[in-house]
Length: 380
Image (tube, rainbow, N blue to C red; front, top):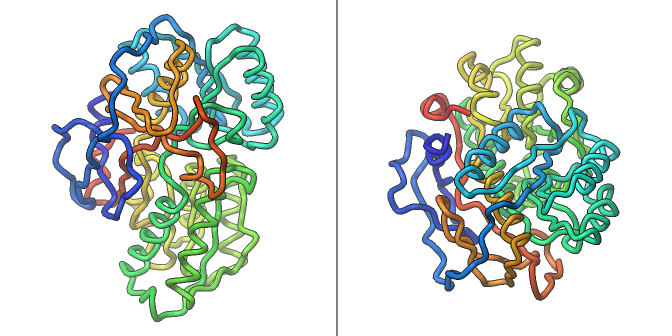
């Protein structure tokens, strides 16, 4: 599993905010992406950190049964064995606020040392996370953030600017692949993802819209209110079919959600459409989309190392639960992964405040774009 996770490639774009250094013996880049591993931080590494051994971390996804979250759990479990602490994967098959609050409360009642959560709705789970903190449980986030004051550290897949740019770049390449000139031709598009209250996906959409407005004024969003399928696999197909029925000549559908993307692709196949008819792209695991790529329904899509992200989230939660303290600019040395610098919260949200201690953001170093040429190099 760790060897698979280590195969991630850097997206070929400027990554000025990358702040987690990987191994210098990373494998060569596969076809379809350029190797561009960021350098390790030059900040001093804490060498006398308290051990994370024996700690218990509740690892809470938005929902269980989704490939993205299951792979993240596999990564967390694999690394935690080497690190000597326990990861309790606790979730619900429904991505709802009430369900996630119940899981948070269950985790606190079970006596865990820390929680690492991907929130379905930052505002909706705020009171439950505050109560967890008041009970002495360390709260960290990964994938989808909570309010900065409700958690200690966030392990993020990238800034909204980086991920919004990645979605637009993949869209542009997909349009070009079927003969559309993104800079000159009229392009109609829309967004299909989980829900507007999911912090991460919504921030990527907002940044993507800014980039489109600036660089591609010839593009028209046919549904500025967006399409949402609430991370429900069946609903993602029916919503996907509704998009295509309402806009039969649409050029581009951006699915910045690991459930919406395969659902939208299935909807396209149900209507007999291929990548030559409509460009569909977004974020999902390689295995969730390979079939559609082989069928000729999608040109490219992307993601990041969700296994590493899950492991990092659990590690930093256990690290703080062990009594270690950090501030912005400090480096956390994560065994087997790398040295990661703590950054201020405003790297994710402009104007966000950062507390003086045990509050901030750690970024993943790399992302990957998948195509028919390189997708079989990944197995998750």
